[in-house]
Image (cartoon, rainbow, N blue to C red; front, side, top):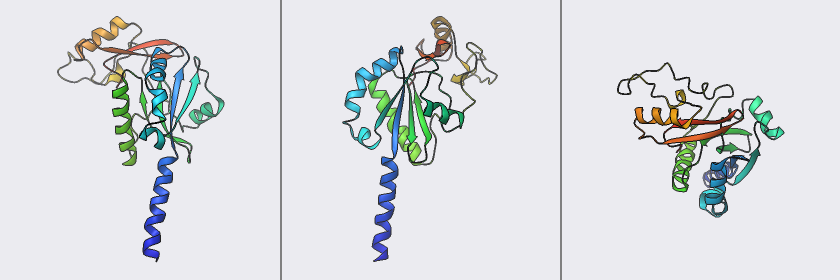
Length: 199
């Protein structure tokens, strides 16, 4: 009898862990991409399989004003730094900590593919996209120290390419092989621009 009960208990514990995860959507009040996600995905998400397994919770921010519980989690290192909106945090609601994240939104299909991939990585013990509490973007337009061949001496680390204007980001995008494609993030200091797609 114990041989039968043990697998059942394991299955219940694993399914409870899956159901204990939430998708925190850190949404900027004036963020165009946050509004785009809400228009294209928000309504259908809760009806989808992934939405039933990982329910959504919207965390609205204005500038650098976050809810108190969210700020406390950031201060304690349970949530990494937020550098732009929307940011999608896969949240362990039992242990009250970030498991992984996606940053930015461009297309519904890409969002679902990236979220599926992130949840798979989390199930394997990884932390996709996770930022530490004190990390984050380098100052706008700072470039970086990691150099690789084939990019004209430019760093291949996308986090080294944060710019104040779309034109700067577009030039970097062309040099890095993204064909001029760029994306932006809303930050408390204003919009920042980066080469390539967000996801």
